Length: 136
Ligand code: GTP
Ligand code: MG
Image (cartoon, rainbow, N blue to C red; front, top):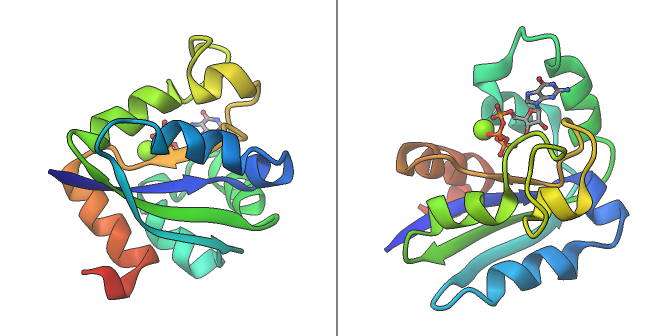
């Protein structure tokens, strides 16, 4: 089985959607939450997480948004969980995301798209080390 790093972004926490989003993940058969923390993310940590986006026009406002309040960081484990959480989330642009997906049901703004989920096994292991150094 796999594990993935999930972040409920500050918009999801501000809008009281933690239970809604975590509930959708929890209800998938066989998936388990193995770490979960409410945490205001530090710029140094996010710089590592979003290293591929440094220098892009959306990077500075993304950093301001991601540090604007507490987020919830989770490790989720289970069958095909990397592809599965991204399917629950929907595409990056919430307007393009189908109703029924997390972004499609709750989002309108590309930056404030509620959730991050690792996009590959390599990303998942890299990101888990960044947010949960003890969970190797
Ligand atoms: P994550 O699951 O959060 O990694 O999203 P993603 O993999 O669907 O998108 P990507 O890794 O390309 O970008 C990371 C985050 O930056 C996105 O989730 C958005 O919050 C934000 N972002 C990406 N592209 C844009 C963009 O073109 N404009 C703006 N404003 N934000 C963007
Ligand atoms: Mg990404």
